[in-house]
Image (cartoon, rainbow, N blue to C red):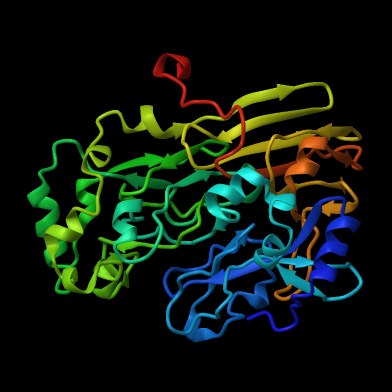
Length: 411
């Protein structure tokens, strides 16, 4: 838990003004009690167990987060939450959530404050050496029954961070269209006694770097062991249907921990957490695979939509070419992380780290207010040879987000 944070309105406002409406964020690393670290987070090799052996290895880094990870009884109260660095010369910091409470619409815009009373999404880097279990994130309706939010999420596989694919370079989505619901129920009934082998009934798609997927809430999926950029809704809820992956055994409570008390162990209820029609969609790739779509291409920069075709979240990949200076305008507040190169971002130095020690600052992650985004952020690539590349994540008020392209537009 961050112990040196302040909640001083004066410090928050002064930092906001000094940064021209842009905050620089402190790296938020998250351990998981399952899985093995993929070692692609730029975290120092000595620091992957910084939370202690009982917590497991660090497999995620969260961005623009105002929520804590749902991470077991030993989790820190603010695990996964983003903090703002007040200065390069000291460790003074405050939470992004407190900054939104103080600045409100001045930071995230009036529309998001009116609809969500804050910032409704976050993003992360997912970094596992082994594939993840077949699981789903609850729909909004199912999550409301346990006092939580549903979680649609998106995937993008950046080339810059995938020097290896881990154990499995493919992701399972949903089930084969010919699978009978009773086959699924029979598999999950034996969760506590034997290997469910549930991916035998699913469909796997080999990962293509530089592309992505939209995964609606209620769709079961088993993500590849590829480092993944994941813009998603403000939620961390799972229901796990696969109990053995790469020899690692998962406990029975992971199957129904997101069920009301009177529904725990109820196989029909657990099965109905799935959006069945989406899970057996015979044209799943047609509807949910996402190739980048070019928004702008000039001699100085290119910007592509990498998350689109859903009503919740959008994301762009911006590339500024060597030696170029550009002013980029966007219609909504956003968080961002640099994944290649170095330069200047507004009033800040911006650099993709080679190595980050746990607990130390970086200069690769920022949060841009709605006004600063609209006025335009000046970005300068100070390299003569290397592109400057940044991933930008937006909430549901991002304008001009493309619809999912039709099949004929993909061919």
